[in-house]
Amino acid sequence: MNNNPNYAYPPQQARVALKTDRSLAKFILLSLITFGIYGLVVMTEVSTSINTIASPYDQKKTMHFCLLAFVIAPITLGIGAIVWCHNISDRIGAELTRRGFNYDFNASTYWLWGVLGSLIIVGPFIYYNKLFTAMNMLSNDYNIRG
Image (cartoon, rainbow, N blue to C red; front, side, top):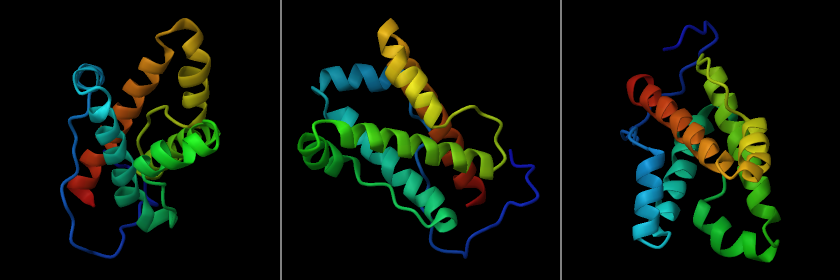
């Protein structure tokens, strides 16, 4: 769990239990069955969860995934989606470090697996698996400690 002596707890507030059952297989299968709607729901939940977990500490707010997918990405011809993925990966990595987890996930994970890994086809799948694992770890820790 957390062995970091600099771990600071935010002011107490009403909390809701976050999902800890994200998986790559379910993401792929249900996204195919629902023609991508499940993928939108899961990524929206990821963006909302990281805001719930990290915002009291880093004072940042990740853009809602639906706003990105339906407005920003089309207007910016996909560049907004690249920036969003870089930023959320970096933010998740920073929160993992802050909470004392020794798990390798940050913006370089996105660039190496999500972008360059697409050349070997399986790279984006590895990226999403690492993303879901990192978010499950953070959500579980949040559900226990806040």
